[in-house]
Image (cartoon, rainbow, N blue to C red; front, side, top):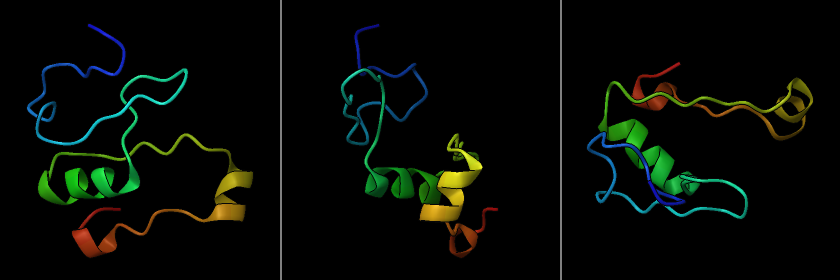
Length: 67
């Protein structure tokens, strides 16, 4: 699998997926929102620190029926 490629999960090729320097498979916030809102089994894993959550905030997903 080349850098920036995602496993075969039905999403690759449907959404814009761009690799950031040093990471594979990063998506833009708009693309993440689109995936989360269109796929009920999609989840967002927020691996930021508690300090980052307090400073920047946490995603509000209630409008698309997610916690």
